[in-house]
View (cartoon, rainbow, N blue to C red):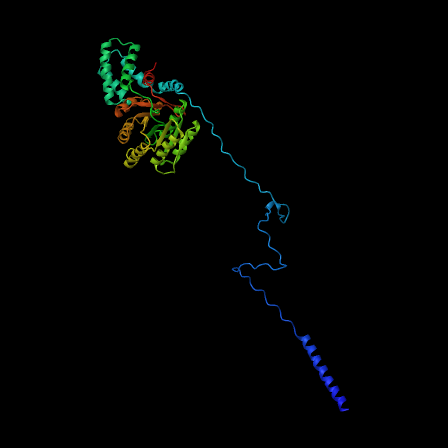
Length: 401
Protein backbone atom coordinates (compact mmCIF):
# COMPACT_ATOMS: atom_id res chain seq x y z
CA UNK A 1 0.00 0.00 0.00
CA UNK A 2 2.69 2.43 0.97
CA UNK A 3 4.64 1.50 -2.13
CA UNK A 4 1.70 2.37 -4.35
CA UNK A 5 1.25 5.80 -2.70
CA UNK A 6 4.96 6.57 -3.11
CA UNK A 7 4.84 5.70 -6.79
CA UNK A 8 1.87 8.01 -7.36
CA UNK A 9 3.65 10.92 -5.63
CA UNK A 10 6.77 10.48 -7.73
CA UNK A 11 4.68 10.41 -10.90
CA UNK A 12 2.90 13.63 -9.94
CA UNK A 13 6.19 15.37 -9.22
CA UNK A 14 7.68 14.28 -12.58
CA UNK A 15 4.63 15.45 -14.50
CA UNK A 16 4.66 18.83 -12.73
CA UNK A 17 8.28 19.40 -13.61
CA UNK A 18 7.73 18.58 -17.25
CA UNK A 19 4.74 20.91 -17.43
CA UNK A 20 6.74 23.84 -16.03
CA UNK A 21 9.42 23.37 -18.62
CA UNK A 22 6.90 23.41 -21.43
CA UNK A 23 5.13 26.57 -20.14
CA UNK A 24 8.47 28.39 -19.69
CA UNK A 25 9.56 27.62 -23.17
CA UNK A 26 6.33 29.05 -24.57
CA UNK A 27 6.63 32.40 -22.67
CA UNK A 28 10.34 33.09 -23.62
CA UNK A 29 10.56 35.48 -26.70
CA UNK A 30 13.49 35.38 -29.08
CA UNK A 31 15.87 38.39 -28.97
CA UNK A 32 15.94 40.73 -32.09
CA UNK A 33 18.95 40.32 -34.32
CA UNK A 34 21.72 42.96 -33.88
CA UNK A 35 21.76 45.86 -36.39
CA UNK A 36 24.12 45.44 -39.30
CA UNK A 37 27.51 47.07 -38.81
CA UNK A 38 28.34 50.18 -40.95
CA UNK A 39 30.60 49.30 -43.81
CA UNK A 40 34.23 50.27 -43.44
CA UNK A 41 35.00 52.40 -46.48
CA UNK A 42 38.70 52.28 -45.76
CA UNK A 43 38.83 48.48 -45.67
CA UNK A 44 39.54 46.60 -48.88
CA UNK A 45 36.53 44.87 -50.46
CA UNK A 46 35.91 41.39 -49.10
CA UNK A 47 36.51 38.41 -51.30
CA UNK A 48 33.26 36.96 -52.66
CA UNK A 49 32.11 33.73 -51.04
CA UNK A 50 30.67 30.73 -52.73
CA UNK A 51 27.18 31.55 -53.89
CA UNK A 52 27.67 35.33 -53.88
CA UNK A 53 26.89 37.17 -57.11
CA UNK A 54 30.10 37.80 -59.01
CA UNK A 55 31.15 41.39 -59.95
CA UNK A 56 30.67 42.50 -63.53
CA UNK A 57 33.98 42.17 -65.41
CA UNK A 58 35.69 45.54 -66.01
CA UNK A 59 36.34 44.80 -69.68
CA UNK A 60 32.66 44.32 -70.41
CA UNK A 61 31.60 46.82 -73.15
CA UNK A 62 29.64 49.74 -71.71
CA UNK A 63 26.33 50.78 -73.19
CA UNK A 64 25.95 54.26 -74.64
CA UNK A 65 23.24 56.68 -73.62
CA UNK A 66 21.31 55.81 -76.77
CA UNK A 67 21.20 52.06 -75.77
CA UNK A 68 19.84 52.62 -72.27
CA UNK A 69 16.07 52.64 -71.90
CA UNK A 70 15.45 55.90 -70.08
CA UNK A 71 12.21 56.26 -68.12
CA UNK A 72 9.50 58.26 -69.82
CA UNK A 73 10.00 57.19 -73.44
CA UNK A 74 12.74 57.00 -76.02
CA UNK A 75 15.92 59.10 -75.61
CA UNK A 76 15.78 62.68 -76.85
CA UNK A 77 18.27 63.42 -79.59
CA UNK A 78 20.59 66.32 -78.76
CA UNK A 79 21.11 68.66 -81.72
CA UNK A 80 24.52 70.19 -82.17
CA UNK A 81 24.59 73.94 -82.79
CA UNK A 82 25.09 74.86 -86.43
CA UNK A 83 28.63 75.76 -87.45
CA UNK A 84 28.77 79.38 -88.56
CA UNK A 85 31.47 79.84 -91.17
CA UNK A 86 33.25 83.16 -91.39
CA UNK A 87 32.48 84.98 -94.62
CA UNK A 88 35.22 84.67 -97.18
CA UNK A 89 36.96 87.93 -98.01
CA UNK A 90 37.21 88.42 -101.72
CA UNK A 91 40.71 89.34 -102.82
CA UNK A 92 40.65 92.58 -104.75
CA UNK A 93 42.82 93.39 -107.74
CA UNK A 94 44.14 96.93 -107.18
CA UNK A 95 44.15 99.45 -109.98
CA UNK A 96 47.50 99.59 -111.83
CA UNK A 97 49.70 102.57 -111.06
CA UNK A 98 49.65 103.87 -114.62
CA UNK A 99 45.87 104.01 -114.63
CA UNK A 100 45.62 106.08 -111.48
CA UNK A 101 47.94 108.85 -112.60
CA UNK A 102 45.61 110.05 -115.32
CA UNK A 103 42.65 110.19 -112.94
CA UNK A 104 44.62 111.76 -110.09
CA UNK A 105 46.11 114.37 -112.38
CA UNK A 106 42.66 115.55 -113.39
CA UNK A 107 41.55 115.72 -109.75
CA UNK A 108 44.69 117.62 -108.73
CA UNK A 109 44.15 120.07 -111.57
CA UNK A 110 40.64 120.90 -110.32
CA UNK A 111 41.81 121.62 -106.77
CA UNK A 112 45.15 123.29 -107.42
CA UNK A 113 44.75 125.44 -110.51
CA UNK A 114 43.84 128.54 -108.49
CA UNK A 115 47.53 129.00 -107.73
CA UNK A 116 48.64 128.64 -111.34
CA UNK A 117 45.85 130.77 -112.76
CA UNK A 118 46.56 133.49 -110.22
CA UNK A 119 50.22 133.60 -111.15
CA UNK A 120 49.52 133.60 -114.87
CA UNK A 121 46.98 136.41 -114.49
CA UNK A 122 49.45 138.58 -112.60
CA UNK A 123 52.29 137.89 -115.04
CA UNK A 124 50.02 138.80 -117.97
CA UNK A 125 49.58 142.39 -116.84
CA UNK A 126 50.87 144.96 -119.24
CA UNK A 127 53.03 146.69 -116.64
CA UNK A 128 54.74 144.56 -113.99
CA UNK A 129 55.44 147.15 -111.31
CA UNK A 130 56.59 146.53 -107.76
CA UNK A 131 53.05 146.16 -106.50
CA UNK A 132 52.42 143.37 -109.02
CA UNK A 133 55.57 141.54 -108.03
CA UNK A 134 54.54 141.81 -104.39
CA UNK A 135 51.17 140.26 -105.30
CA UNK A 136 52.97 137.42 -107.05
CA UNK A 137 55.10 136.91 -103.96
CA UNK A 138 52.03 136.93 -101.70
CA UNK A 139 50.32 134.36 -103.92
CA UNK A 140 53.25 132.00 -103.59
CA UNK A 141 53.52 132.46 -99.83
CA UNK A 142 49.79 131.84 -99.42
CA UNK A 143 50.25 128.55 -101.27
CA UNK A 144 52.85 127.51 -98.64
CA UNK A 145 55.77 127.55 -101.05
CA UNK A 146 57.94 128.99 -98.27
CA UNK A 147 59.84 132.26 -97.91
CA UNK A 148 63.21 131.29 -99.37
CA UNK A 149 61.85 129.36 -102.39
CA UNK A 150 59.40 132.21 -103.08
CA UNK A 151 62.15 134.81 -103.15
CA UNK A 152 64.23 132.65 -105.49
CA UNK A 153 61.31 132.09 -107.84
CA UNK A 154 60.32 135.76 -107.99
CA UNK A 155 63.91 136.84 -108.71
CA UNK A 156 64.26 134.41 -111.61
CA UNK A 157 60.86 135.35 -113.02
CA UNK A 158 61.73 139.06 -112.95
CA UNK A 159 64.96 138.46 -114.86
CA UNK A 160 63.39 136.22 -117.48
CA UNK A 161 60.37 138.47 -118.04
CA UNK A 162 62.68 141.45 -118.54
CA UNK A 163 64.69 139.53 -121.16
CA UNK A 164 61.60 138.06 -122.79
CA UNK A 165 59.98 141.40 -123.50
CA UNK A 166 56.63 140.54 -125.01
CA UNK A 167 54.67 137.99 -123.00
CA UNK A 168 52.08 135.87 -124.75
CA UNK A 169 49.99 133.46 -122.61
CA UNK A 170 51.83 130.48 -124.10
CA UNK A 171 55.24 132.00 -123.36
CA UNK A 172 54.25 132.89 -119.80
CA UNK A 173 52.93 129.43 -119.15
CA UNK A 174 56.15 127.82 -120.42
CA UNK A 175 58.22 130.25 -118.36
CA UNK A 176 56.30 129.58 -115.16
CA UNK A 177 56.36 125.82 -115.78
CA UNK A 178 60.15 125.76 -116.14
CA UNK A 179 60.75 127.77 -112.97
CA UNK A 180 58.33 125.72 -110.86
CA UNK A 181 59.97 122.49 -112.05
CA UNK A 182 63.35 123.87 -111.00
CA UNK A 183 61.97 124.53 -107.53
CA UNK A 184 60.44 121.08 -107.17
CA UNK A 185 63.30 119.23 -108.83
CA UNK A 186 63.15 116.81 -111.73
CA UNK A 187 66.48 115.05 -111.23
CA UNK A 188 65.63 113.54 -107.82
CA UNK A 189 65.08 109.80 -107.38
CA UNK A 190 61.46 109.46 -106.24
CA UNK A 191 61.16 105.68 -106.48
CA UNK A 192 60.09 103.96 -103.25
CA UNK A 193 62.93 101.53 -102.50
CA UNK A 194 61.40 98.09 -101.97
CA UNK A 195 63.77 95.79 -103.87
CA UNK A 196 67.24 95.59 -102.34
CA UNK A 197 69.64 93.75 -104.61
CA UNK A 198 71.30 91.51 -102.02
CA UNK A 199 68.35 90.28 -99.93
CA UNK A 200 64.65 89.87 -99.37
CA UNK A 201 62.40 91.38 -98.22
CA UNK A 202 62.62 95.13 -98.65
CA UNK A 203 61.73 96.87 -95.39
CA UNK A 204 59.69 100.10 -95.30
CA UNK A 205 58.74 101.91 -92.09
CA UNK A 206 55.91 104.45 -92.13
CA UNK A 207 55.94 107.24 -89.52
CA UNK A 208 53.84 110.32 -88.86
CA UNK A 209 51.63 112.26 -86.49
CA UNK A 210 48.12 111.18 -85.49
CA UNK A 211 45.48 112.22 -88.00
CA UNK A 212 47.69 112.39 -91.08
CA UNK A 213 46.26 109.15 -92.52
CA UNK A 214 49.34 107.09 -91.74
CA UNK A 215 47.69 103.67 -91.27
CA UNK A 216 45.46 104.24 -94.28
CA UNK A 217 48.48 105.26 -96.33
CA UNK A 218 50.27 102.04 -95.30
CA UNK A 219 47.30 100.01 -96.50
CA UNK A 220 47.11 101.94 -99.76
CA UNK A 221 50.83 101.49 -100.32
CA UNK A 222 50.33 97.73 -99.94
CA UNK A 223 47.78 97.97 -102.76
CA UNK A 224 50.27 99.85 -104.95
CA UNK A 225 52.90 97.15 -104.38
CA UNK A 226 50.47 94.27 -104.98
CA UNK A 227 49.31 95.96 -108.19
CA UNK A 228 52.96 95.95 -109.29
CA UNK A 229 53.19 92.19 -108.65
CA UNK A 230 54.86 92.24 -105.21
CA UNK A 231 54.01 90.12 -102.17
CA UNK A 232 53.61 92.00 -98.88
CA UNK A 233 53.60 91.44 -95.10
CA UNK A 234 52.15 94.20 -92.93
CA UNK A 235 53.46 94.90 -89.42
CA UNK A 236 50.85 96.51 -87.13
CA UNK A 237 53.29 98.19 -84.75
CA UNK A 238 50.79 100.89 -83.81
CA UNK A 239 49.86 99.14 -80.55
CA UNK A 240 48.74 102.31 -78.76
CA UNK A 241 45.58 102.70 -80.82
CA UNK A 242 43.18 99.78 -80.46
CA UNK A 243 41.63 100.06 -83.93
CA UNK A 244 44.89 100.53 -85.82
CA UNK A 245 45.77 96.82 -86.08
CA UNK A 246 42.22 95.91 -87.12
CA UNK A 247 42.23 98.65 -89.71
CA UNK A 248 45.56 97.58 -91.15
CA UNK A 249 44.56 93.91 -91.19
CA UNK A 250 41.43 94.78 -93.14
CA UNK A 251 43.52 96.61 -95.72
CA UNK A 252 45.82 93.60 -95.98
CA UNK A 253 43.03 91.03 -96.32
CA UNK A 254 41.60 92.90 -99.28
CA UNK A 255 44.73 92.31 -101.34
CA UNK A 256 45.92 89.05 -99.76
CA UNK A 257 48.67 90.56 -97.57
CA UNK A 258 49.45 88.87 -94.23
CA UNK A 259 49.34 91.07 -91.11
CA UNK A 260 51.54 90.55 -88.05
CA UNK A 261 50.10 92.08 -84.88
CA UNK A 262 50.64 91.94 -81.12
CA UNK A 263 48.63 92.56 -77.95
CA UNK A 264 47.06 95.96 -77.36
CA UNK A 265 49.52 98.33 -75.67
CA UNK A 266 52.27 95.79 -76.34
CA UNK A 267 55.84 96.52 -77.38
CA UNK A 268 55.83 98.11 -80.87
CA UNK A 269 59.45 97.15 -81.46
CA UNK A 270 58.62 93.48 -80.81
CA UNK A 271 55.81 93.56 -83.38
CA UNK A 272 58.07 95.20 -85.95
CA UNK A 273 60.79 92.62 -85.28
CA UNK A 274 58.32 89.73 -85.69
CA UNK A 275 56.95 91.22 -88.91
CA UNK A 276 60.37 91.25 -90.54
CA UNK A 277 61.05 87.74 -89.25
CA UNK A 278 57.75 86.47 -90.71
CA UNK A 279 58.47 88.25 -93.97
CA UNK A 280 61.82 86.50 -94.25
CA UNK A 281 60.38 83.08 -93.46
CA UNK A 282 57.52 83.54 -95.95
CA UNK A 283 59.85 84.83 -98.64
CA UNK A 284 57.79 87.91 -99.45
CA UNK A 285 59.06 90.90 -101.40
CA UNK A 286 58.23 93.75 -99.01
CA UNK A 287 57.49 94.28 -95.30
CA UNK A 288 55.57 97.46 -94.46
CA UNK A 289 55.68 98.55 -90.80
CA UNK A 290 53.01 100.94 -89.54
CA UNK A 291 54.13 102.77 -86.39
CA UNK A 292 52.11 104.67 -83.81
CA UNK A 293 51.11 108.24 -84.62
CA UNK A 294 53.38 110.03 -82.22
CA UNK A 295 52.96 113.65 -81.27
CA UNK A 296 56.20 115.48 -81.92
CA UNK A 297 56.00 117.09 -78.47
CA UNK A 298 56.18 113.76 -76.60
CA UNK A 299 59.86 112.98 -76.24
CA UNK A 300 59.33 109.52 -74.75
CA UNK A 301 57.21 108.35 -77.66
CA UNK A 302 59.71 109.73 -80.14
CA UNK A 303 62.42 107.75 -78.35
CA UNK A 304 60.23 104.69 -78.73
CA UNK A 305 60.16 105.29 -82.48
CA UNK A 306 63.93 105.31 -82.54
CA UNK A 307 63.89 101.99 -80.66
CA UNK A 308 61.60 100.42 -83.28
CA UNK A 309 64.06 101.43 -85.98
CA UNK A 310 67.05 99.99 -84.09
CA UNK A 311 65.28 96.68 -83.36
CA UNK A 312 64.22 96.23 -86.99
CA UNK A 313 67.76 96.86 -88.15
CA UNK A 314 68.91 93.78 -86.21
CA UNK A 315 67.37 91.85 -89.11
CA UNK A 316 68.43 94.14 -91.93
CA UNK A 317 68.77 97.87 -92.66
CA UNK A 318 65.63 99.83 -93.47
CA UNK A 319 65.24 100.54 -97.17
CA UNK A 320 62.76 103.39 -96.69
CA UNK A 321 61.45 105.54 -93.86
CA UNK A 322 58.41 107.37 -95.21
CA UNK A 323 57.03 110.38 -93.34
CA UNK A 324 53.31 110.92 -93.87
CA UNK A 325 52.25 114.58 -93.76
CA UNK A 326 48.81 116.13 -94.11
CA UNK A 327 49.07 118.71 -96.89
CA UNK A 328 46.35 120.83 -95.28
CA UNK A 329 48.44 121.51 -92.17
CA UNK A 330 50.80 123.81 -94.09
CA UNK A 331 53.66 125.20 -92.04
CA UNK A 332 52.68 123.12 -89.00
CA UNK A 333 53.57 120.07 -91.04
CA UNK A 334 57.10 121.43 -91.41
CA UNK A 335 57.50 121.57 -87.62
CA UNK A 336 56.46 117.92 -87.38
CA UNK A 337 58.77 116.96 -90.22
CA UNK A 338 61.73 118.60 -88.53
CA UNK A 339 61.34 116.62 -85.30
CA UNK A 340 60.78 113.28 -87.03
CA UNK A 341 63.86 113.84 -89.14
CA UNK A 342 65.92 114.23 -85.96
CA UNK A 343 64.78 110.85 -84.62
CA UNK A 344 64.89 108.70 -87.73
CA UNK A 345 66.51 109.21 -91.09
CA UNK A 346 63.58 110.16 -93.31
CA UNK A 347 64.12 109.00 -96.89
CA UNK A 348 60.85 110.08 -98.47
CA UNK A 349 57.64 112.03 -97.91
CA UNK A 350 54.03 111.04 -98.49
CA UNK A 351 51.66 114.01 -98.81
CA UNK A 352 48.05 113.10 -98.06
CA UNK A 353 44.89 115.17 -98.67
CA UNK A 354 46.63 117.12 -101.39
CA UNK A 355 43.31 117.43 -103.22
CA UNK A 356 41.70 119.17 -100.23
CA UNK A 357 43.86 122.28 -100.34
CA UNK A 358 44.94 124.91 -102.81
CA UNK A 359 48.27 125.10 -101.03
CA UNK A 360 50.25 122.86 -103.32
CA UNK A 361 53.40 124.82 -102.54
CA UNK A 362 53.88 122.63 -99.47
CA UNK A 363 55.58 120.18 -101.83
CA UNK A 364 58.38 122.68 -102.38
CA UNK A 365 58.61 123.75 -98.74
CA UNK A 366 58.80 120.30 -97.18
CA UNK A 367 61.43 119.12 -99.66
CA UNK A 368 63.53 122.15 -98.87
CA UNK A 369 63.09 121.63 -95.12
CA UNK A 370 64.10 117.95 -95.07
CA UNK A 371 66.27 117.67 -98.14
CA UNK A 372 64.34 114.53 -99.18
CA UNK A 373 61.86 114.16 -102.03
CA UNK A 374 58.10 113.77 -102.02
CA UNK A 375 57.62 110.22 -103.30
CA UNK A 376 53.89 109.60 -102.98
CA UNK A 377 50.77 111.75 -102.93
CA UNK A 378 47.28 110.97 -101.70
CA UNK A 379 44.38 112.56 -103.53
CA UNK A 380 41.13 111.43 -101.97
CA UNK A 381 39.54 108.76 -99.79
CA UNK A 382 39.39 105.96 -102.36
CA UNK A 383 41.39 102.76 -101.89
CA UNK A 384 43.50 103.49 -104.98
CA UNK A 385 43.90 107.23 -104.46
CA UNK A 386 47.63 106.99 -103.76
CA UNK A 387 50.14 107.39 -106.55
CA UNK A 388 53.82 108.13 -107.18
CA UNK A 389 54.60 111.83 -107.26
CA UNK A 390 55.52 113.14 -110.71
CA UNK A 391 56.77 116.74 -110.78
CA UNK A 392 55.73 117.35 -114.40
CA UNK A 393 52.17 116.15 -113.82
CA UNK A 394 51.98 118.17 -110.62
CA UNK A 395 53.14 121.43 -112.21
CA UNK A 396 50.84 120.94 -115.20
CA UNK A 397 47.97 120.50 -112.76
CA UNK A 398 48.98 123.69 -110.97
CA UNK A 399 49.09 125.99 -114.01
CA UNK A 400 46.61 124.17 -116.25
CA UNK A 401 47.06 122.79 -119.71
